[in-house]
Image (cartoon, rainbow, N blue to C red; front, side, top):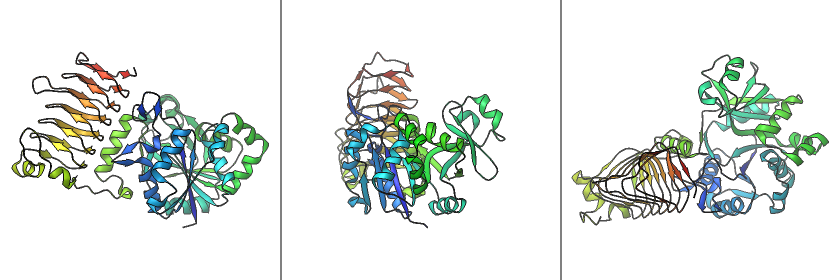
Length: 422
C-alpha cells in the first residue's frame, strides 16, 4: 500500500448527538471523546486504522473542548503506538468548516502524498488497501467512500451523489427529498451515501487551496459535503466514489445505539471485538445487597440471565432477577433486582432501580433511574439520559432525551419524543 497519512476531523459541536456530547450544563463533550464501549470513540478509530497500516495521524480540532479532550485521550499517540499531531490553536479563528480545516492541516504539516480524511463521529468497515489502490490508479483528486441505503432512508437525512458508470461523480444532492432521489437514481434500493470518509491527493488539493477562488471560498464557508466537493466537481476536477463495506454513524442517540449493538454482535471485525459476553472478575466476585450472593454464584444458580453481546465493567453490582442482552455496562454501575436491559449503553456509576425495563436507551454517567416492582419505570424508543439525570419511579419515556443534571419526575407518564433541555 502507498504511504498514507490520516486526518481526523474533530471540530464540530456535536449538536445532533446531545445529550451524549454534553458533560454538564454549558460543558461540551467532543464527539471524538464520547464514550463508546468503554473507550473514547477516537481511540477505536485510530486503533482500527493503525491495524490497516496507518501510523501518522493529524487531528483537525476546533475549540478548547475538542482539542484538549482528544489530546487527553490520545496524547501524541504513545498509548496506541502511533504518532498524533494537532492543528495549531491559532488556526481556530480561521476555521470555516471541515474543508477549510483539512486544507489548513495540509499546509501546516506540509503533507504532499495521499491522506485519509475521516469524521470523529463514525466507525468504518473497509478494505483500506483496495480503496487506496483504486484511488491512486484512477488519478482522482478525491475519492468519496460510500455505502448504500434505500431512497426512503436517504430522503431528508443523508447526502447523496450522481455518478457515471466509472464511479466519477457528476453532481451532489444534499439531504434531498424522496422525489428528487427517485428522479435521478436508477435503483432506489441502492442509493449511494457520502460517509464523510475521503481519500485525497494532498499536493493537488493544496495547490487548488492556494488559488484565488477556493481561497476566497475558504474564508467564508468551506465544509466538505456542502461546499468543497460540489466546487471541485463543478470546476471539472476528478472526484470519484467507491463503496466500502459499512459505516456506523454515532452522531445521534438512535444511530449510536444501533451501531453499538451491531459492533458488539461482530458487525465491525476491524474493531477486533469478542462476541462473547465479557464480565470483569471484580464484578463476578461482587455480592449484591439483596441476596448477598456473588454474581458468579447467581449465574451458576440461574438467578441472573446475561445474554449474548454483553460487556460488564469493574465493580458492577448485579441483583437477582436481572436480565441483560446486547448491553455495555460501565464501571461501578448498580443494577438492582429484576431490572431488564436490552440494547442499553449504561455508563460508569449509573443506577438502575428494581424492576426497571430499559431498551434502546443511553444512560449517562451517574444517572439514576428510580423504579420499584410495584411501579416499574419503562424507558425505550432510543431515549438518551445525560450525565446525572434522575428519572422518577414509575415514569414511562419513549424517545426522550434529557440533558445533564435534570430530574424527570414520575408524572412524566407516557412522555414521547421530547427533548428536555432545562
